[in-house]
Length: 302
Image (cartoon, rainbow, N blue to C red; front, top):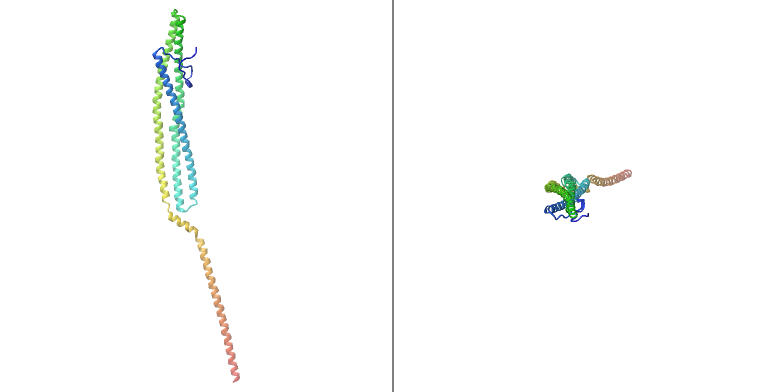
């Protein structure tokens, strides 16, 4: 005999539930099972989406940490080429950024452990709930088949009380099994719903706590980094830079050149003076000789 009534696809498994409009109890269990399946499907979808989004959030945070590490290395490398005050300020700034990345790493690890993993665990939980649903649907289908079999027996053998009584017994047994399994499913799904709410509160609470701790530490570290930059003495570093344009050894060489130039000029002046003096002395000697010659001539004449 073919299956009739509302069909439950997906992982619910088995044959579809047959529409048993004969009894109010059966219709109530049908509606209850349908609602439970919708609840499980809803959690499966949205928890899966949340898990993927949070996992992406964690990966983005980890990539931001890696980029910040590159920034720290570059600031350190640049600081080594700068003037003393700027070098000290930049290195302290980079050290604070490095400290911030340690906190960001802790943020990544905590989000992974306290948010992503609990959401991921719901994959297994949903699988178990679907197995429970499958057992319930199987029992419901068995009850529906027994009811259908009883109707056929009554139609074919209306006077055979023994066969009819046997079919009624089988139906009663199937109905009791379906009711028992339905009650178990109801208890299971009630616990599932209770745990789901508790887990959601914890997961989102952990997310907020982890983010608050990180941002509190980040504010503290970034404040220190800001002060390191503000405390850089611009005027002192500017003087250092200006002095680097005229280094002491350059000034010393310049003084030596100037001194040598002055000494050379003095030597030249002294040499000229010496030559002039010698010329004057020679001229005086020549004049003295001339005077001696004149005196000798006068004596001879007398």
